[in-house]
Structure formats: structure tokens, C-alpha cells
Image 1 (tube, rainbow, N blue to C red):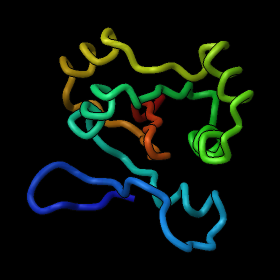
Image 2: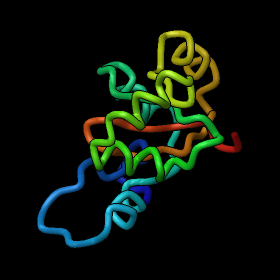
Image 3: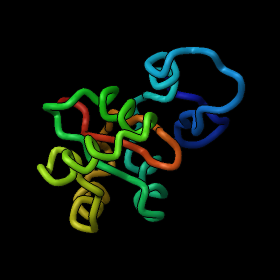
Length: 117
């Protein structure tokens, strides 16, 4: 869900807060959206941005983060299906600022991948 902020770049909700009795899947859907690199850049700069391989559902990875499924997350990191965004990726996306990303906020992390991958 994209949250417009007047004026400026697109915004997404940041945290799953409060006495919300929705399922984890419903909550994660609320924090999913399409954004550009300018939205993701600050998350990269603070070390909280991860690339999710297209073979995985963004929502499944988000649920593993939200449910603190450490072993599963570590397995994805080890296999390369989940990668902490490094300087090389950031430079590539800085050079192509029109790239759009699927993104999911699972505070304090943001999971992403370029659209169409």
C-alpha cells in the first residue's frame, strides 16, 4: 500500500503497531507497495535493506521476519536467496533512478526486489 505524502516521494507505512488483531499476512499486505530507489536509499544507508530473490514470495520472507523465524532467514541468507543490499547494488540503482521496486516493510527492515524480476 503506497501512502502519499504531500508533496514528495511515495511513502509506505513503517511499523506494525497497536492492538491490531489482523493476521500476520493481512498486516504484511498493508506494508507492501511499489516504490523507487529514493524511498529505499535511507534504508540502505542505515543497513536495513534486503534483496529477496524472485523465487521467494515477498510475503513469505516478510512473515519469517515478523515471526522471528531466525533459522529460515539464516538459511535464505546462506543460500543467497536473501541478500543484504551492498554498495554495488546501491550504485547500480543510483545510476538507474527510474527503477521501481516491490517492497515490504517489516520494521526495522525493508525487503525489496526490482519490479518484474
